[in-house]
Structures are given as structure tokens and as C-alpha cells.
Image 1 (spheres, helix red, strand yellow):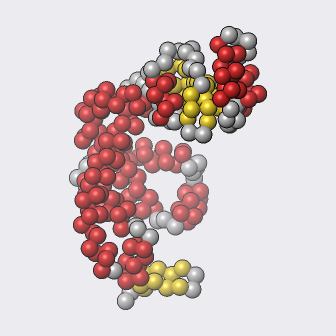
Image 2 (image 1 turned 60 degrees about the vertical axis):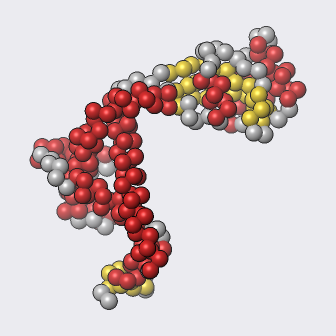
Image 3 (image 1 turned 180 degrees about the horizontal axis):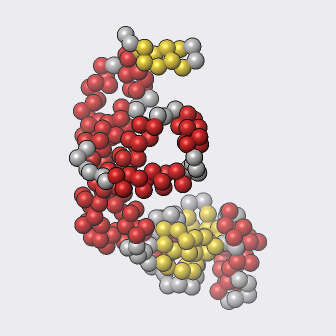
Amino acid sequence: MTLVLKVGEKEYNTEDIISLLNKYRLIPQIAREIIIDQAVAKIEVTEDQLKQSRLQFYQTHQIANPEQLTGWLKQQKMTTEQLEHLLLRDLQIERYKQQTWANQVESYFLQYKEKYDRIVYSLIRVKDIGLAKELYFRIAEEENTFAELAKDYSQGGESGTGGLIGPVELTTPHPNIAQILRHSQEGQLWPPITVGDWIVIVRLEQYISAQLDDATRSRLLNELFQNWLIEESNKVVNYLTPLKQEL
């Protein structure tokens, strides 16, 4: 068997590496990368695009001269050719996303828009229902502000911010809290409800409707790409199962 890898005093041959890939469940990950390579193989990238990508990479990693580049490559155990391949591949992937799903982004956004809407809300959580009711009425009757009571009584990390949380997407809070906030008007205060082991008081402060801007468009393209990749990977992983059992 050919020696492939040496770590410390331990040497690994081809059979060892295959066994380790299976042991650490890396075969599906490799399969995903192969799927990507096959998909983007015919995507063309211009020299100007590659040059711009290279400059952006240098800026991101604070590489200002050949010596710093050599040091970075040595640290990463990479060659210049490997780095160039990665830069090219990243460009191909981005172009593949655009070519394949750019015309689906708007409909995808409209279908799942609520998922990307964000909220700012105030939260108090305590263990005692009697205390929760008292705090609710003190806020409702404007005896104290929500922030004052959250700092003094809330038993979670939100006490440090006066109960204020966000902006966060609607999928972030506990589902019961998200359901309430989804149907709230800004400034609406809700009576205490039980959420798990807590008694909570919530108030919607701001509802921020998602917009299909450049950042959101890029995110959705990536989601569509990842959804496709998961589907394709599942096919390959199922096919590899008998091979795993033989190893």
C-alpha cells in the first residue's frame, strides 16, 4: 500500500485513509464537493474576474506583499496553484448560482418572506405567575417602564438590555412567542403566558418587513443552492451506504 499521510509517528496508507473517511463520516462531505465540481466544471470565468477575486482575497486576509502571501500559504499548507484553484472555483460557484436560480429568487422570497421579516421586542420572564401579573399591570398602567421592570425582575439575559431583544428574525424566538408577535401591533403588550418553565410578558416594539435587497438576494441564492446540494447529496449518500458497510 502507498504511504499517503504521516501524523506524528503514525503512517497511513490508502486503505487506512478510506477507513478514516468512513469512520469520521467525511465521505458525504467529499461527495458534496464532487457534485459541486461536476456542476460548475463548464462555467467560464474571465481573467479580470479572477484578478478582482484575487485582490479581494488579499484585502480580506491583509496580504500586502509576496512575503505575506508566502507566509499565509505556508501556514495553510497550500500551494499557489491550490489557492488559484479555490479562487476560480468560488467564482464558478457564484456564477452557477446566478445562472441556475437568479430567475427564481423573487418568487422564492415572496413565498417565504415572513421567514425573513425581523422584529424588535421586549421580554420579561419570571417563574412566579403572581409576580408576572403584577409586573404586567404596572407596565400597562404606566407605573413603571418595561425596561425598568425587566432590569429589576427578569431572570434571563435580557435583563441586561432592559428586556429589549432584536432585531431578530421571527424564527428566532420560542415558537409560542413568535406566534404572538407575528399577530401583534407595534407597542402591543401581552398578558403573561406560560412558555416552557417560564412565565413571560412580551411587547412588540418594531416589525421590520424584509426587503429583496442585494444582501437578501445573495442569501436566497445561497439557500436555493444549498437546497439543491442537499437533494443531490442525499442521492449519493444513499448510494454509498453499501460501500460504507463493506469497509
